[in-house]
Image 1 (spheres, helix red, strand yellow):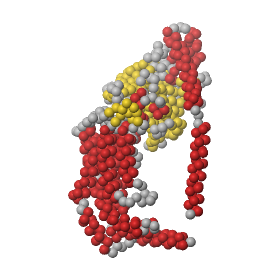
Image 2 (cartoon, helix red, strand yellow):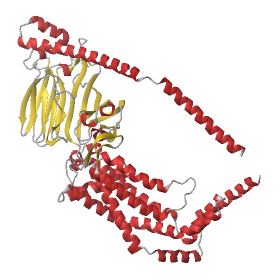
Image 3 (spheres, helix red, strand yellow):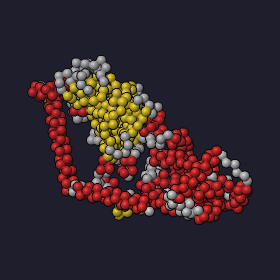
Image 4 (cartoon, one colour):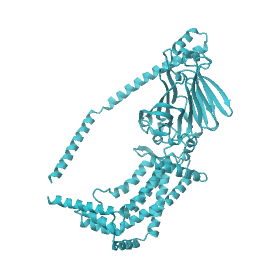
Length: 630
């Protein structure tokens, strides 16, 4: 009794200490006014930095335009040389203007700005956003930048995003080639070369220099900085944000990602591609000469904003920094750009390990999706509407898994038959947990029943269920495909809009999650009712789980893809039907009872493991009795 009292006092003491610590934290937390003041201060500093930067850029552009307008203006030319050194030549050319060159094919339209020489607009021609707006990965040059930061031999630090390139467009067969040159002279330059092929989301991209050995300072690091703000394309910005992150390949064929939250200063070696992945669209920079190191940062804009979901324009802000190396005093990097859908089939066709960007699950789950569900669903959807294809695939999967369901239900039926005897043992040895466990195990052994045989079939189904959980939200084919009342199987369905927002639930009511929750509840009642026993100390409350699971489904999936909720609804509906057939047609409980009674009469040979377990339990019981006597 004293020992229990000490334990109780200890618990109360720890609880009081914990409460005092929480109270101290509460008293010392900043007030809303202090938080707002700090936030305003940071915003003011950032605004001042941006204003100063914009002013410098504006002055620089004005200076360049003055040189172009008045090539004989010696003062303007002298000012440009003081800022740019050898690259002042580029500021004197007619191309030193904020103009762009457009290249396009059947699927992709790109605009490349003279200033910076990088892509200032990337439009995917064949897709629309949830509100019927064209899908832009880069728009008006406002959400992306691409810059080389380097030093010169005359001690200047320059950024290519501020300098003007001269465009030259040409054709090579059906391919469109755009050369953007940042010139020191007619024969000395830094070149960005873009080559766009027909019907392709991937374009060749080359960074090379010519005759700049005496211009670029080889002792200073040359940094390639790429930044992108992910434009929102989906109906739910919060849901889209869950599948928006940075992916990359390193050390040959290894791949990784930064995750959904804030991330900065993740540095990897020998990086061969970097992908700024959005849910259904992705921008990827690939290189044939791996970057020796690469640093990544991701800022969760949608997660920090106080705007409503419908008002969010940008989900995340990505940045990557990669140092470039000179070869013989020159730059020479063969690269590729990908601006296109996060479609497994398209990404896999490039044979560059880009399909790893699609979140199909790790290990066995990804294998099941790649080699089973993706090709199977592609086959079904080739001749069936997408919603019907989901239903048919779900039916076939459940039929294939029905033997596992049968074994699981058979085990439950056996446990139901033994329930009266187990209840009797529990009552007889209610004050002796060890003896109760021994007698229960002995009963299972005599009856030839393995209590774990009901769990193992359920565990066998987990890889399939989890693989499908990853498959449906990642299936690009479901994007904007309708079925019944759902207008987009890749987003949530809506049968009613709420005039307010419920935390964790949203501002709408989706019907598929409601139907799936009802089906799960019925299924849990059938399975839990089959094996329900008196609640054992330390065991989970099955009734609580029975009510919690459908509730979690109802709330959690209200904002998830309706295709996934449709799958769970059909899957549980079919499982209920299979279980009813098994219960009423296949399984005869009287025969099971007779078989168990027959097994009890047979001499049961114990294996080495069972003998060892029995000996250990007997030893534990003896120790318990000896302790009780003391």
